[in-house]
Image 1 (spheres, one colour):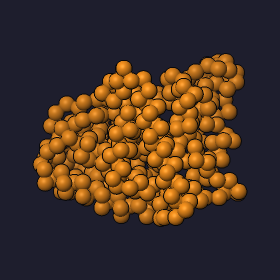
Image 2 (cartoon, rainbow, N blue to C red):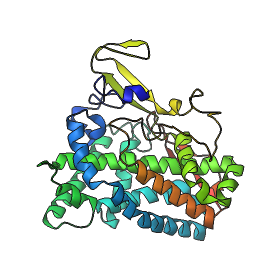
Image 3 (cartoon, rainbow, N blue to C red):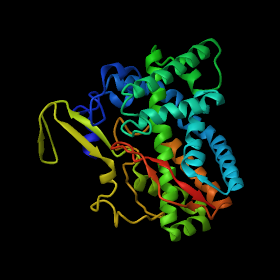
Length: 349
């Protein structure tokens, strides 16, 4: 899997990363960097990475902590609730929307349409009698982003949308369609996957109270390794598809041009030849070469640092101020073969 990810000339992303091909009419929103090969991928990543820098994410750290503190304050006041809606979804969605400059009164609009897109296959979000639900949701988000981009061209603000629409890297700028697809990628890779990791994090800590106590007793010592272990065990994205771009060989197996491969991150993160006791949840696990953010290569997750910061921030607040927090029932899981999502998770303090 790691080798395939390092060889994009042999194993292409451009023909789609999902199990089934998307209809052509969906490409404006879904044809993001994750579905591209070089040189298109390199061009977009070069433009985006100039705006989406580690230093910019570093400046977000204080904001992430403030939002996490507010969310935990409200949970403590209620004493119980749906952990997904009230904690795991709120933090990454709020940060992504603030990062992009999306007004507060549009956050719920974004959340509802993102649920439809990523819930494709789950009848709660995409009813069988409404086959156009996903495309309509994508069109709504694209329209919102295009409006926001037009505003930022006229009146730039201190947000990522302004940096992206006004970025000029070697004479190249993002088109309106590319901006919309990047926002879609941010929501999927930067919001929903983090929501999934945080949700699974509470499940893991509830199921392993010894690990929970260990982390609460010395949070900073284990913060980095515990966050990586949560991502490994959660494996928010179950797989990515690749297509053989030419006849080639991988690990002794021959592939013909056009053959499809599935890179199962969930399985790789439990590979007993790589991880000692892979089914064990160990907040001190090190080394931990998991593929929860993808494998090394051109498609390694651009938002990995942001995701780590958010997972760490929310559990720092929870374990410090609500150490009794636990899953109070079974999770309601998303019906999906792509995202290891949780729709609802009752929690109590």
